[in-house]
Amino acid sequence: MELVIAIIAAYLLGSIPFGLITGKIWANVDVREFGSGNIGMSNVLRTLGPIPALIVLLFDAGKGFFAVTLGRQLFTDPTWWLVLGIVAIAGHNWSIFLGFKGGRGVATTAGVLLAISPFIALVLVGIWLLSLAISRYISLSSIIAVSALPIIFYFLDYPITYFWLGLLISIFTIFRHRPNIQRLMAGTEYKFGEKGQRN
Image (cartoon, rainbow, N blue to C red; front, side, top):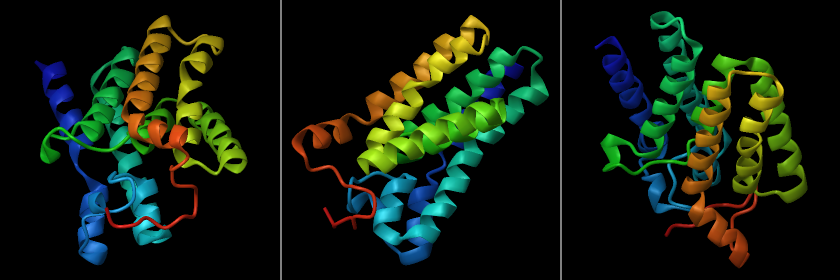
C-alpha cells in the first residue's frame, strides 16, 4: 500500500504543468499556442523569455528531485528511488491535468538524476551543452544527452535495473520528441534563441 501511495503521489507531482501555470501568471498566455506547443522550458524560453523559462526549469526539475527524495525516505532499495522518479517523468509527459498530454520530460529527468547522482547529472548537462553548442537545437541536444544515460549507468557499474530503467527514460525522451524529430528532418525545427510564433 505504501508503494501504491508513493507512485500516485509521484505521478500527481509530475503532472503539475508548471509551464502552463507560469505562462498564465507571467503573461496571461497559454504557451501551448506558441512555438512547438510544448509546456516545457524550451518553449517557455522562446515564448516568454529567459526568466520564466528558468522558473519552469527549476519547478519541473524539482518534480523529479522530490519524487526521488520521497523514495529515499520510504524505501531502502535504490531501485524504487529511480522508479518513483520515472513515474514523475511520466506524470509530466502525460499529465492527468492536461488530458494525459504534457511536455518532453527533460527537465524532470534532470531533477531525477540530480537526486540520484549529481555527478551523472553534471555529465549529461555537459553532453547537452556540447551538443547545443554544435547543433543549436535544444531538442536534438536533449535526445543525445538522455540517450547516453543507460550507457553511463552501465559503465559506472550501477545495478542492472538502473541500466534498464535508464533505457526506459531514454525511450520516453525519444518518443515524446517525435514532433521535434519530424521538424529536424524537415529543417523546420526551432533553433536556440529563435522566437516562438503563435500557432
